[in-house]
Amino acid sequence: MSDPINKPPHYNKGKLECIDYIKQQLGANFPSYLEGNAIKYLHRHKYKDANIQDLEKAIWYINKLKEHYKNL
Image 1 (cartoon, rainbow, N blue to C red):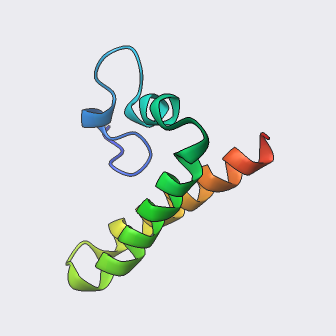
Image 2: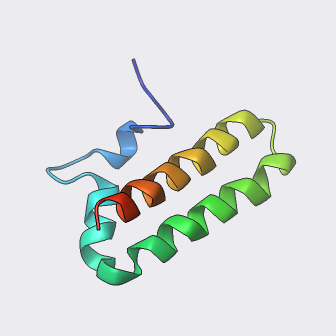
Image 3: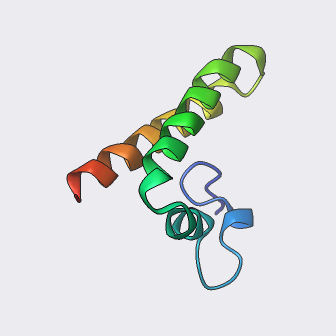
């Protein structure tokens, strides 16, 4: 069963998951990427029919940001 929030199939093609590749490429700027995406999903949820899904994606990015800081 597909999970569009935690593991979207289109982000898991190949050997490295998309979020891990982005982290690898951005290095120290990775937290800003996570924060920016959380802001994006929080902003746009009110303009879409899939607003719950966008809120869940914002939470996903915030949780990734928390995980990043916990692992420092």
